[in-house]
Image 1 (cartoon, rainbow, N blue to C red):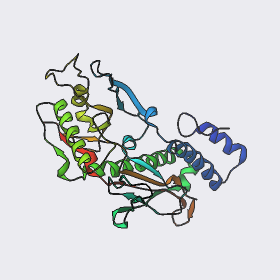
Image 2 (cartoon, one colour):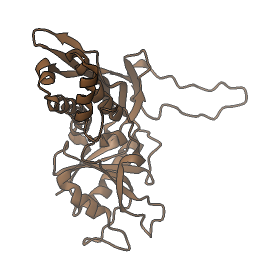
Image 3 (tube, rainbow, N blue to C red):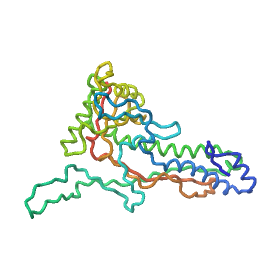
Image 4 (cartoon, one colour):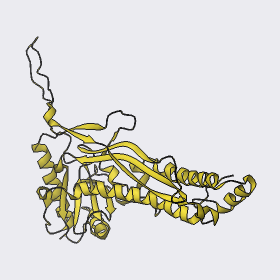
Length: 329
């Protein structure tokens, strides 16, 4: 008999099971909370791949620039959390690691090649410890108490609401942390508005590429793919700019001439600015422990049981020139 239906719980099935088995309060609590945990944790552990959560294509390849890729809008269904930042940050899978930190190399152009004479020894690149940035996993924890009286008086909706809130808060806080890494970047990446959104995007990418090439980054050029992150209020002007092509220009007749892989709308960045990002690279996201529920702890002083939820992760932007903060006006 399943306890999980379209909602978190099938209440009629639970009541029938309770009558058949003559369960104690602790047994009831265990079944109902395990059902909630199974429902939410199963969904939380689903890794989101870019192809799975990009929405409709908002702009096709430019007929005059046949190498251009279609632009996708990253979006989720109403019951899914904001995880758009995952397309920007490279994941470091530390789930099976015994190390609490991973190191991100904060130099570029470190490996060089030299012409040598026959028999001559090559000069090998050695990375000094001072060029490594350690990223330490941070543990986050929260929870709630399920009271005996909720079960006694069949107030199961309280458990459902708290379990939903536990998951929603987890993903909301995580999204805030990762988007804040971009918001907190220095004013050195700012790009002033220039006539139109499209021209501002073009200028931002030109300056982004130039800054990275000057630092020795080799995997970036005019054919690289970029991601735009914007506030929901600015989504319209961004998509309007991206739909312009040489064959179908916008009112300013200025198309975006670079490859925008996706647009990530979110409430986590302020309106009036949007971010152009070269994804992955030195944008790091370490995952040590997925969101999970800990063993239940009985608390007689509350006449209930404490349910703790936790996980462990951290993130870093080691090269701020992979991003440009562009003004919308």
